[in-house]
Length: 384
Image 1 (cartoon, helix red, strand yellow):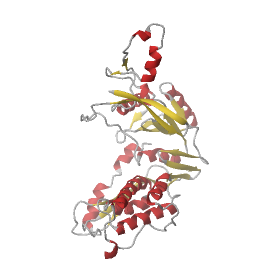
Image 2 (image 1 turned 180 degrees about the vertical axis):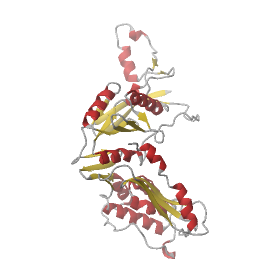
Image 3 (image 1 turned 180 degrees about the horizontal axis):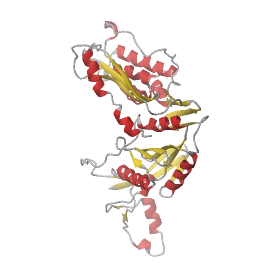
Image 4 (image 1 turned 120 degrees about the vertical axis):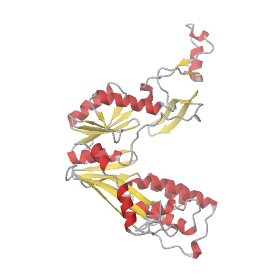
């Protein structure tokens, strides 16, 4: 495989990383899956912290993959910068004109690197007494010390008592280079996975990042637009059913992708994103108006988010939802949506989806929806 130095500017200045590039990327592999954070699992730590009145901590792994031993015989050509230093040596090392490195640790860029690091982290946490959740393998719990951790690649989102958080930080630091945040409690805010969390005594507010809204406004040239009170649009008419041009199609599809990610944290945008997504192939003037209306609504509702109340425990898991009947004018199919709460904390919400078949009565979509309502695995994922 080939290697190269990758340069990137970040908040702390210029960063450089030595990465690999595998030539056999076309080869089909089935051993690369790594459990990563989802919209639901990233909220579990928030739910457990707010219900148990515990503080939180984020551990950020540094040079993460470089901790993982390379399990294969991997030979690479050294970087040119290093070769210049090598050839300048006077102790005889420079006499070797064509040196080759044999890698001892896993390089960034390896397709298997993420999987290996996940296995490495699992070994660390299980060695500390944590148990991995069977339903959601990115979630770990230490039952005797009441510590909960959710792992996303090399970010650890954890909650426990103050003494247990200090112990967790010290134990993980012994085996992994990390940077830990200070304890996060009421009166503070922090960012994790592109969401801002505002911590209060009586609950937590999770607000998605505003840069997605800014990007949509920039793509559409609507930075100075007036906010809209709702995301809904009027019914299409014959005058605005014409297809839009190629440039506007590109803007439409780009904004759809941005809103699709952003809407994971906004229940009120589920119906608009479903309507926008159905028209990505051939959007019309009315569809483009609907997109702009939704972006204007996002502009005026940036502060909207998910509220996790501190009252109550984690004993009551409630699922709710609704369906309509043949409301899609194009397909005459029913749409469904649903949410799952743990004592007021919304951990799951289904996007508005169109059912696969045309229902013959209003009761048929309801029956099909109930089979999709997934509350049961939360009992396994939220023990105690």
